[in-house]
Length: 86
Image (cartoon, rainbow, N blue to C red; front, side, top):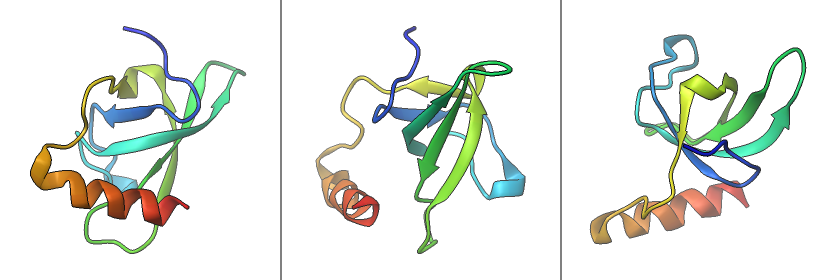
């Protein structure tokens, strides 16, 4: 599996309850940190919330999404998500 780069979509592989993020949430990599170890700043739009949540995550906490993120029914949700990031 390849490592994420900026603007990649990633899927959270485990819950982060203190941030209100649950496994399988989709986020966008906004920056990469290299010290003391590689980490990724990922921006999420949690369901039911009007604000974005940013989290600094290690590589083992995310998986890069290379395929389609949403089915035909979810396309409107994807458009809404992108609008909130602009």
